[in-house]
Structure formats: C-alpha cells, structure tokens
Length: 311
Image 1 (cartoon, rainbow, N blue to C red):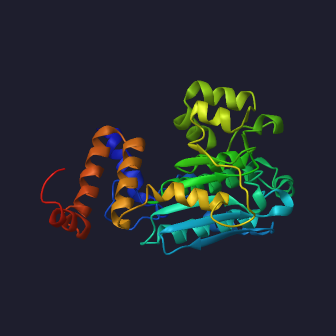
Image 2 (cartoon, one colour; image 1 turned 30 degrees about the vertical axis):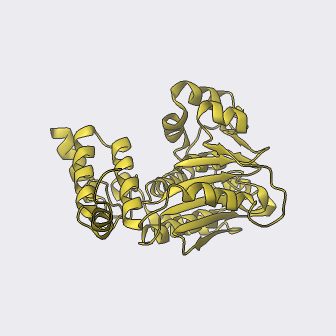
C-alpha cells in the first residue's frame, strides 16, 4: 500500500508527464524522467540543437493515419541532435491529434535508421552528456509508444542500433524483403540506451532478447517472423510509386486495425497499454475509466441503434 501511494504521489508530481491512471485528461503521455531525476529538458534540448542535420517529417492524413519519416539519407537516416529534438516535437503534435488513429514510422530513401549520428555522439561522449541524451530519447520514445494511436514501424533497408530501438517503440513492425533489424550496440562497446532492451523483452521474450543483444544478430524478415520481431513481410515492390509501394502496403495493413471512430480506436490502445504497463488492480481501474469515455458515446449509440439482435 505504501509503495502504491508513493507511486501515485510521484506520478502526480511529474510536471511534464501525464499518466495512464488519469485517462480522462489530455495526456502528454508518459515521460520517464522529470526534474526529480535531475532531468532538465530545456537544457538538454539546447545541447542537442547544437548538432544539426536532417529532419523528422510528419504528415497527418484525413484517414487518421499519420506518417512520420526519419529524414537524413546522407547518413543512413542517423539521428542528429536536432533530429532528436524534432522527434520530441512531432510526438507532442501527435499527442494533441484528436482525430488520429494510426501512425507509420519510416525512413527516407528506402533505409529505416542507423541510430545516432556519430559526429554528435563523439561530441557528447562524456558520461554526463550521454546520460542526458539517454534520458531525453527514453522520454521521447516512451511517449511515442504510449500515443493513443496504433503504430507500425515500416522497416526498409537497415534498422541499426538506435534505429533498431526505434522499431520497438511501435506497436508493430513490418519488414520489407531484404531488410535487417540489428542491435549493434555491443560492437560499439555499449548496450541500448533509448529503452530498446526493456521494450525488446516484451516483444520477443527474455531468451531471444539476450541472443539478439549479446550476439548482435542480424534479424531478417524470416527470423523476424519466427521470433515475433516482425508482424508481417511486405511484398517486393514492382513499381517506383503507386499502390504497391511499401508505404501503401503498410497503410493497407494498418487500416484493418484503424477502421472505426477515432475515440474508439484510441480507447482500445489505452486499455492495452494499461494492461501491459500497470499492476492488475490499476489496469482494471484504468480500463473502467476508459470504458466510461465510450459507453453511451456516439459510436456506441449508433451501433446499438443499427444492431437489433446478435448475428
């Protein structure tokens, strides 16, 4: 009981973060770190902005599916410091998107992401700066995962290091033929620092996660399907553009799970997240609260009016 009370107190005291135990409020959902952890967001943003290059592009579509593009092709879409700040800003926009239902995360120029830009990494190689960057990206990717949108990583080419971690911050992963996800951190004398290890365990289990991290295993689409890292494999693209492009295939795949009113799709995502992240008693209370936001709502009343009996 004391631990539960302390947990609730800490959640309430976090100035930058919403919580899943308060689902009725608009959420800037789920920062891991705040001032009580020595995390100074504005100071870290200023440091990261000193290393420019590339961009994070966001397209919100009328379908309710947004496309987030990691755009730094000259460096295999590696994250510069300014791109890390861009990512956080785009996540904030998605948190405020009331009509949103789904999200596709992709890389530009048929490459997903190769992690951190080594020029920025070398410049912030002291432990303190590294820890601050780690906290910043853990916050951003945790908020990405906790968006009330159903998200899918569209993996083309290579997803390496931090790029592999980024795939784990999505609900699903679709892999193009010939693509590879690889946690190469060991080769850099590191372990994942953007939350990728913790999320990977939820996706593939303890044993497989240990193998992927300690062996820096190249996960192709076949192995990805076997271990649960991939949720589907895209067909080989026969055209440069058109309905058969990987992006269109990903949109078609995702649209099966985003049919329906945005409040209902968002509610589904919220109850699944609470079930995964919270103790059972808290998850049940959250589910009850989220249920209350859709019971008697427009979608519920319309369904009751149009379905007079079970079929």
